[in-house]
Length: 559
Image (cartoon, rainbow, N blue to C red; front, side):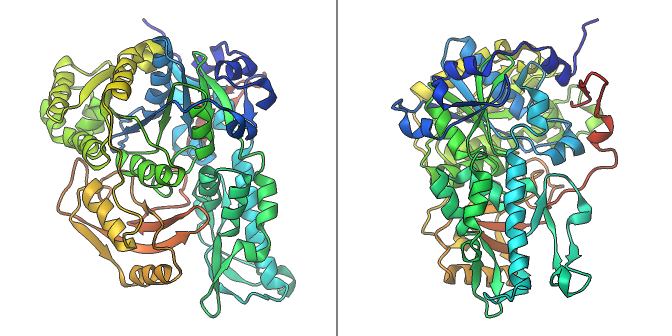
């Protein structure tokens, strides 16, 4: 019987190359390489400004609407990069960093899987190079300076009831969502309602990911709106003189992290906001650095294409001036059958009827890529042993009707070799099928028009219901001059709609906008729909229960 190793066992048995070798492979001179041990490094920001190399092709990997059955988006991203290298192409991969909350909560790791992983897997999933800790420290420094300002006389007239800035910690901890602090008398601060977000939901994370330089980072931090005065005027971090110190904490975190795949492909792993509450992509600096290092750059955006890909296009590409060359939409037969109403326990059985009901989810994502954003697209079916040829043929036929090719991916089991067919199709798309990249909405549209455009064009909904409170917030933001910013819609990842129970490709629904706020530093307007958590909780049996370390210091149970 074939032995199946766990992800962490595969990663621990891997023979990695020195990070200096990986940097050389990426065309990065050693003077720009800041080693963090033998197999991790940060790349000096000077590389990006001093290199004369032209940009490579940019490939986005996205996916269908996620289900508990899994899609394998990160695994496919890594395997595709290894596949491109295997067919002789010069390639690097750019990924997000995992958050500790999900690592100890529901996932147990987020660095790919099987034989398509980035390593060192344990480091990446835990403290890595300390970026998230720096983000948390910068976030909480600002929080401390807000309350200290109030304690020391409140010269700016900050209304404690209208402070919008939260503290953060990189752990799923529902106890911290809503707290009251400053208790115990005058010496201990001003009592007020407060709360924590998970670090990846912090605006500081979004700012780090969208900043182009240290100067840009500092300017963005200064623009953060932390709350409002008693007279209703916005108060910025710059008015509290916090931006300089926050930048000092983030100076090294801004430098992109370089690691490698199991097969030695250079990999940038940097930044990690969740795509259901932020823009869900790795940092602009990492992507731009990667584009200077290879002929092909494979990157990914979080959750389904209605979230991560939409925000990658409408926010990241718009703000950073990026133009993707091709898109890969990842799907599994299992997940599509789940979208078709099949129970998780029955996914191993052939069921064309359920697949027929569920494949509409894939087709809508593909149609969005091709018709809304006008980009060349290929579907990657992350194949499981239980998938039948009849089921695969069904998907191929349905995608062919939209003029999209399908390629099977077996990178989890076979590494880069299992991604060669996909890699060849991606190269063909990049060189033969030129896109006509466009956004879902124009910058000059109103805030309400932008929200409606995403709901109708991308989600497939009938329109938007804006609550009176949200409408008032929109009017305030437009008066403050923020109407030109892109919208970042916070929505459940489990459905095209704002109702997580509506699977497949629902229609006839309207999305309810409950709250609208500005992330002035990041440069987008956050639109909250449904019940979206910025501080998740741990499940009944957290992944942490299965994670351990032996007497030799070897970690077990991390996926």
